[in-house]
Image (cartoon, rainbow, N blue to C red; front, side, top):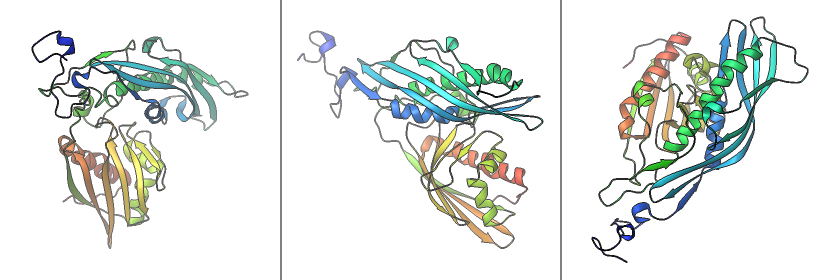
Length: 340
């Protein structure tokens, strides 16, 4: 093997403390199939469009067939994904009549440009004609296209963390290769998260912090507890689509997929413990959030304890909880009280 400064530079082994895949020379592969399945469902479920005729919403992802993987060779990332997607949608006219249909995306692939992606929207058999079908074919299909574009972008940023290892000087040399041209068009929690992509993980442990915030609400512990686990109430105070499985191990997704997680403990009227994350956090990194409900006679004190929040996200997370949970809940349900 050549010494540093001698011979063919392609064969020089750059120094790394752990001697792992130096210079990112060796071919490595990461299977993204399971991650992609969860991500695609979280991005598609709850998508909705509305006009003067009524409202339509994606209610089920009934089929996800395919695979996805990422390869790293000489610091160059090569993306492969191929999916056949089928979803169900439900429409409701302004007069209250309900309709059902399907959405099919037969070839979501790295070989196809997102702009040219075929998206078929249909009514179920024996369903009557409705102007809502045109709404779904126009606006609904475009929202699905945007969601699938977001999946590709998350695949390139969120899932790839750690695949390009740091070199001796701490710099990761990243190149990416993909034939897809996707646009990230998901509303973010704040302006900072919408303009900044998740950084590539260099293999160093993420520094985290813990903090707690409190607030009081003019309601009972039972009513406040229900606000966090009832899907319709979550959709009401976030003013966006949400999916909430109110059981231990149940998942939740709100604010158009920008916040997601899993309930790990539910004690009615007393405590909720959950794994919680912003979508722009490092891949698979969750904070532990504990909500404690304390009966103060005519009020309920809510204590929120956050552990494992990335240091760089501390202020954003605090402000997010105050704005998108505390203030929104008070304004929506009339639980207004003093913040301290």
